[in-house]
Length: 447
Image 1 (cartoon, one colour):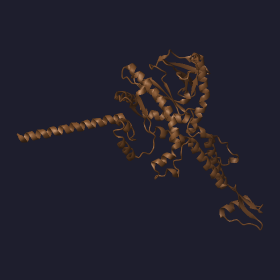
Image 2 (image 1 turned 90 degrees about the vertical axis):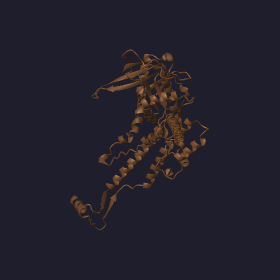
Image 3 (image 1 turned 30 degrees about the vertical axis):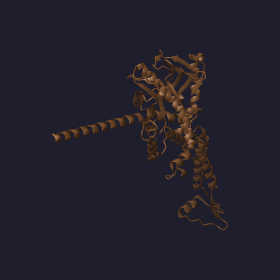
Image 4 (image 1 turned 180 degrees about the horizontal axis):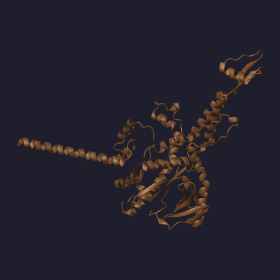
């Protein structure tokens, strides 16, 4: 969530007002997270009278859409390289990323953004003076920007709740991150009470980063929730009708004197004797199966169409489909991925900028964040032979680091290039040693 105000309006009173806005806006995010976990509105379907069948079927398309979209976007780790070929810059960053398990962390951020429309992380220094970053639930955070065209970050407010061990009571807290400090408050019904003096966070800017899923901050399945609800309802009612059919009534015509004992004997002997003019038939609801299935099929297609996530069980994704054919089928998902990439890249650049500033303060490394190239790779079934031929064709025209980044099985081009150079040096040393031994052997024979 984000808000824009002027820097002069940023007072303790306005911070309390923003905390109230977080409370108001978090219901939307919690609803989206509930839908991802399968807690759909169909589960609140009221009980039918006389204990009639009351099925509550959840077809969790929301989870499917997020998992497929996130896997396609962030299923393969992000690659980093230096535009100026400064290997020390990339190595310093990779050391921090490995310390934080950056690949898993990025995947978590991408999933959060896919569900809620945005994801957030905070950078901090741990007890060993190491740079760390951690994800913050999106329902707890509000980014505060100024009203200028640059949209500079003024602060970030995290509003969170801590329960006692029994879970019966809780206390709300608010952490406010500005450009120098993090200030801790108690929060209660629109009132903030500062707990202690502000703490330095040692970063030269607000150490909270926003990763937008798209410009509108919408989740990937947010636009199809009504379609998912309709599909759940159709499935549930269909099962209700099936059970109603199974529990159908037997209508006996012209047999008004039938008793309960007669019915019991009928069920036991499975023989029915009818008087002249009498009859027997089941009282059932006529089901138009074709009509019902057409509605559900239409809902399914609309869910996939408007979420841009295709049905991977469709015949269009048969095992014999070519790579180009699959890419055409995934064109909608690719458009979604490209929008995600732009929002995520902006956040990653800010992360690198903050890390670079801290490394410079510590005297560990001097990194120009603008020099770091960020490469995303779509998680598509890859033809390794085809990719290898492309790399072979481009050899000598493109840098080796860039070529290695094109190979789907290479996650760290810099590290792979270092290993390649080491192997080449070892081969040269071995060859030089072998030639020296041959020369000594020849001299020995001459003597």
